[in-house]
Image (cartoon, rainbow, N blue to C red):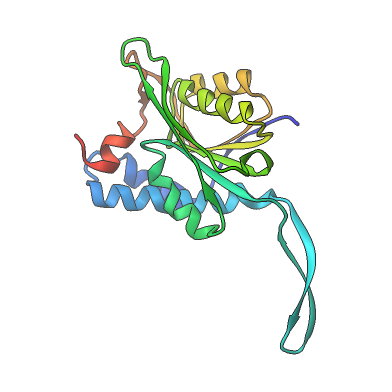
Length: 209
């Protein structure tokens, strides 16, 4: 299976992305709007989830219906990925949630893992790796490496804003993984931040700067 790069072109996503790019948007509105964008994206990202047919008895007869055929696992990359989880689980309340902690060395820009806890059914599930920013791609690549080491074969990445450098890293390292973004920006700057981007998403989510 070959992965694809999908930029979600939707007026509501564009409108809300404009709000979170604005440096004047405060923590409360930033956090709420990131969650709203994540929910809008999740609706599109899950469009091709496998289903199976079954019958249910309605008050007036039998109906053929379709239900999800696989478990869904959401794996946020700590900590910014947490800002996308609650809204996606609102859409898919049966989804399990794993966590992968990766921090980026500010000098080398290389990822370092400090935490990983995944549901036992992860290898059979459709897994959504969520992290708002795809900058160098190092953290996302590392998270996908971990998942594949656990036997996971059905993986998609969901992010808000990406840089071409990060997209290339994932496509080269994991060409079978679909990449979903709300926007693909111009480049990385010398500090590894996406330009124009939206700043440090973790800090803006949690008010730590």
